[in-house]
Image (cartoon, rainbow, N blue to C red; front, side, top):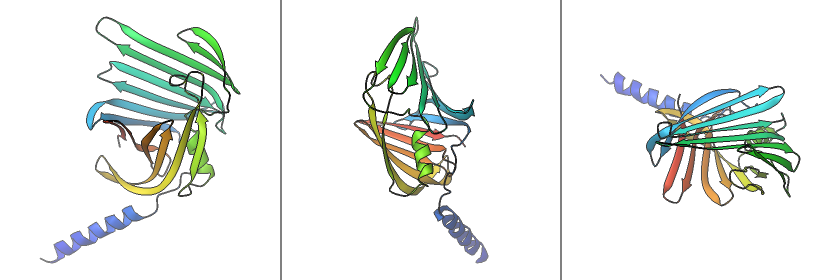
Length: 231
């Protein structure tokens, strides 16, 4: 009769040991499509999708977001060179109401510090005063390049015309190390990344051993937004 508790203890100890081992170090930018749940203050509010691929010798990153049973839909498309130089950014947002639909379409074509903007079919040219990257694969690329060293801090300017039309935004990420987290009741040894975007400080991103987002949390005032991967 004592064998069952002993066996259970051995299994639990083994699971703890497996979860405590070092996380795999991502070696390449991952390609594929991943689905996520979107939660606001712990309540399911929509879904998200991340897609990453190489097309015509460029990285193509897509992020789709749907909220409120399709009332709000958005898609970001980011195109970069294979060393993560900015090429093109598209941002499409649609808000459907009972009798109308609002839309915002922004396309930014990058040529060094010169950006050609097309905003709802109105074209203009912006000259930025600093070098920049797009919020696609650059930071993961740099983490891989630096072999995911704990404590590594990377800072660069990011251009996003939906936030700042004629200026760049300082972004800093810090690789805090590894942490075991539960995603849909499955334990993962994840890489924990602390991120700040401008004045927004409370952003945590967890990556799996392939560099794919497991969970991302943003805290602002009294709101917490989470995207959690569906496994």
